[in-house]
Length: 406
Image 1 (cartoon, helix red, strand yellow):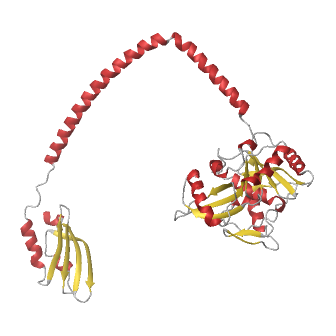
Image 2 (cartoon, helix red, strand yellow):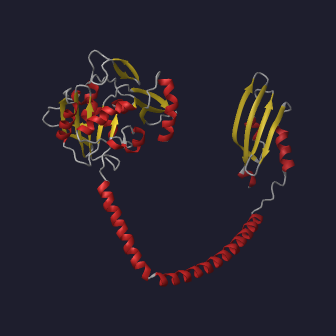
Image 3 (cartoon, helix red, strand yellow):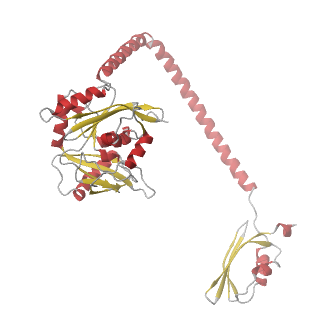
């Protein structure tokens, strides 16, 4: 199900040199439905007219976010693996990465990026788009002349995920396509069929059957990014448009809120003055009582800690074990059953077990048979291995035999 991080409604406007096209997406249960869609041809004499007509046909409200999708002149897209970083640190790391990825970095460049999910090795795939700042002047002109505002510009391949099918965007790049994280020459006939199946599952198309996926491919592909639950948190990483082009949705509401807060503060202060003296006296009395209780509590805590320490010391003395009373005798029985060519290279005796490492030149050493003569212990673990053709190494753990204790 959708959570609070998802938009109830959003719009995407995709532009190229010949047309503008857009869709309005509205959430319906577990999918987004395409409420409205339209395409407008651009008149070279007045390109902003197509933008204005399309925005009017989309008919979105002021609270509906609008994202611009397209390619900026001089823009460069690439994808690389990074590590998990905050958006600010990732942006600083990208500035160091640019000279290795772009032969000539645009003057006054702007960049936006989207970091994916880390894999098992901790590698984070990052999609990056870099464009010169002057390229944004066209978007500013179109929005200003069409009386529009946009939440952000998004290059469509920022929505590319690992495992996606090869993608061609002929309206944005007539020479190259993108596949397996790298650019490659564009196919003579782009194949949109894999994405038609994906979009059919992720979106609810208009019921009249007139919707053509290829006509709105950039909108649908970018919508997959906007629909992700972490998209809003990635806002700083995607920031590219100047603040002046962003919508001012909450200015009036903010003014009213500030006025109401000021009125509440004045009202509270008016009633607080009359009760100040009485509250001050009660406050002083409560502080005195609090200090008395803190002192009594501190005294009782110190006494309890002292008594608890004495109790733990007495318990330790009562539970103290005297140890093994016949160590030499039991070791004598153990060593007496071992053959002459056996050597104990390690011995560790604890209350619960006896750990031995025995080296013997006899490869037919049968420790289980020998240890049956020892009444005090029984075998818990036994490992034997031959070291070359000379020595048999036996690692042995013995535990007390309860039957012998009886």
